Length: 181
Image (cartoon, rainbow, N blue to C red; front, side):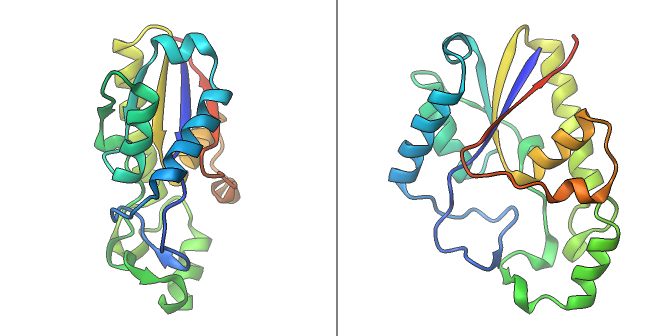
């Protein structure tokens, strides 16, 4: 089974903001441009037959609807971005340096803002991956967030090194993971 992980389009008005699971706006034109890019990156047979799953965040669902048309994507909380707890909605530069450093020292276990740790996001990812591997045959597409994609890539490679969670995941990028059924 193949899982194609797609990062949502760039949100607007979030420069310097820790937004995590906050529902932030995405420009309609950016959705269209990102959809065109995703169509170019995904094999035609996948676009024609794969079920499209999505984080419920509007920045993901807008893109997922374009990719899935004329069908509806399947929303699932397991594909949601990391919950940054009370950091969400704050500027990164307003968060105490010692808290950011503590997170840097334990990227898998630390819970930023008393929200979720990367390990908790990875558990959601594993739960979702296990579910789709039981109900899907060939390939699925999941429109999701950088945090989910980072932990999925790290877990699929058997990596627990915290530096792997710093991978750059560009907006609209597509990452293919292959799993045995």
